[in-house]
Length: 319
Image (cartoon, rainbow, N blue to C red):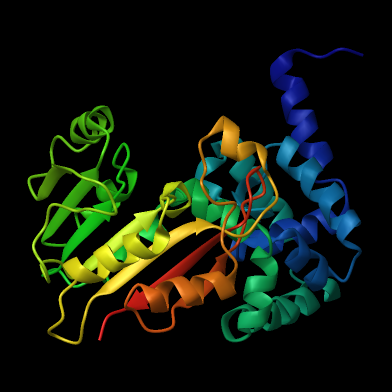
């Protein structure tokens, strides 16, 4: 028999209450927001069973569902129910005071909440693989790198050599006193200047990594990202970096980010690469010949969508 929509809705709401497990769930979720796994543990039922009953209650309009990464959390909010629904639930709940299972549920939920508060392994286990997705959804994927850059001394002057369109200078500018963006291509510098038009502490200079138009000992750090493989003489480039770095206050820092040694010979022809990356042994030799101590070389973890060779970050210091 087909009923009018209003009557059918009432019947659906009542039908959703027609199971002892679902009634116990509503009692729990009126007092505490719980994940599917937590509901299953309190009620001592398989998680698949808990999921099935929670779905019925949600579709019946009794529960609010909140997604946290890959986990779903459920709660009964009386104020979000209609007056008739509240009255129905209060009436049903009033008949459950002497049921043994509800008293046991109340004891178990206390244990689950205590475990949640004190056991950090359990806490992060509930979030599991959803934590990174949640963090990215809430805050984006760039904030960690930007926050770490604020560890740089605010007083520093940093040269971004081979700056290209200014993606590195853009990250550095809010964190240091001055950025000197150096590139031998005037169109690249124009693009970088347009990109960083609002930054008042970035100076744009035409020059190459082998010949920077800067005074000796004039910068605290040099950054050279994906440039060294284009240079005929990497030692000359490193000597030039050492020249412009400060020799006082403990010396300066050079950061070189480039490709690990690879066999993609076609890059010489398609992109004008002079070197097919660098091995750690080569880097140690190049940095020493360029006037630095032994570099600290770290392989950068590859991103899943990256198609190019692996990358490294090498840090050298002048004495």
